[in-house]
Length: 163
Image 1: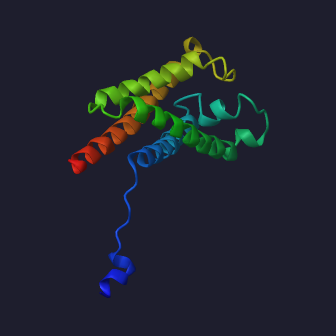
Image 2: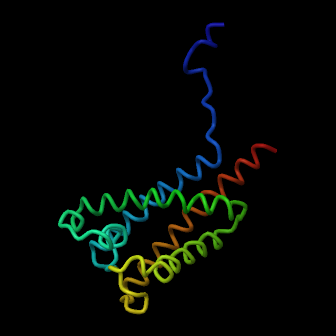
Image 3: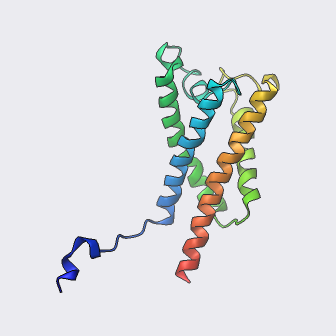
């Protein structure tokens, strides 16, 4: 009877698949935009997270430093929650890693081609250097794979446990 009262014997309620997916999105946004900032710092790309999020609307000295990069990385993490939600709604049942990578490639195309007029500070896709194109495509492919495969894995794992 005393075992029922102990805190260590209580089981934690598992998180829902949607909650896990949104958390995956936030962590993925933080992780891959941080790697994008590092790639920009080492001149692998001319586009950094702050270039997209801050420099298109702000022209202040603090936005060009590390504080601007950190704020932009956090903002991309928040935006990535919405991206993970879209993936959760549309593609969570996919089990192949290639579909997740294609999702990242499609996301790259949307950001660099379709949304380019919003980010006036970023050069057009045809004017970007080959280093920038290759680096950003790789980052988006890895981001899509991280988001997609993690959400699909969680979905399939939850389906296996419930049956």
